[in-house]
Length: 530
Image (cartoon, rainbow, N blue to C red; front, top):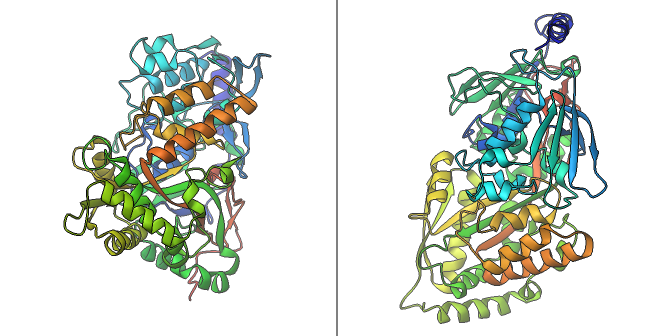
């Protein structure tokens, strides 16, 4: 670091408001965050919960506004070549790590190379595939240093793409594109060096992750909340009670059965919004019996999505027959033919396919649904199992596991048959959903590997506008025909947000950075009552 820059950083740290003097009152935000996080390493993030923490701890070249729009992050501006293949990012002069070191273009080069390195096993590495040589690195044909990213100098970063990618900036919001300090450790009991609005105080497993304001963050003067706790809240009923008692300011979820009542009793504190996410069941296609497409389609047809969204959930979710949420352009036209059938027609076809797959009342399918511990995962599994039993005679076992164990079980596929899944889009485009089931995607826990499907996605990545849309349409049709998953419903987000919290804005990716929120000085935690 040059002496002048070091002096500027020191002066900035000295003149920033002290948390103990300016933000002492009402400066702790308590956020329900669902299951415990699996990692503090942004390149290893798999879950929504870990992503929430990572977005507070780190910042990429670009970031998001409170409404979800892509805005400048560590890079204050960028230039894109006329052919859309070369991006040059100009980093802020005052971008710094939580230990005071400058964030440089070389840090982003190292971070991007680490993310695509197969040794890192990043579950989101495929998001960076538009970068030239990323696919060859992921396949082991090139070393990570071959990635087409270059530090032109300390403040300028150049990235070259293999083909024009209109949504490339949105990809860089993902934790897979975050830099990591080369001296940082991600262990729960080790110091963590981050570059976002917050820094790690401590991680108490199965309890909470505690963060505090990062005084070296480039926009620290605008960060209003001093401390934040991301609290493990797997039990929605207990989370609701903690909110009512004033022990939480934001909930991760709201029990669906109580949403209608809450709209009256808690009025504007209930926030429900459309969400780019799908709840589904995945089959393990790598072993019998679900290497049989007829059986997969039969079970999907027997699930009454309308009953699940109306009677089990009942808070605005939409039945999912296709794979793309309604907010995605063209999603309404991407529905299987049977989406328009009557319930009786669907069941008749389900029974025909079930029999063709070799099953009957005398020889029923015996299977297992695996899900991670959570109230509504269990409720949905019970309902689905009952439907299969009533209409097809399937005998289903239910098995739940703690989230970290569950994710590992899904990945190794040695004993899973059917597993609960959810996919929350990384960016607002159909490819985010379709790429999940690409044969090479490490997040594809189904084992689905269709040469035609992968070819359509690869060709779409090289096209734009109408040609790209048509190829993605064909890919979705192939996916629906092969049925490696059972889409069940499209999410809405459901949060309770305390009257103390200001600055909250609903957005389709449900990303709410603590740096964009504030706490009213005129209110304090209180008993909310019924």
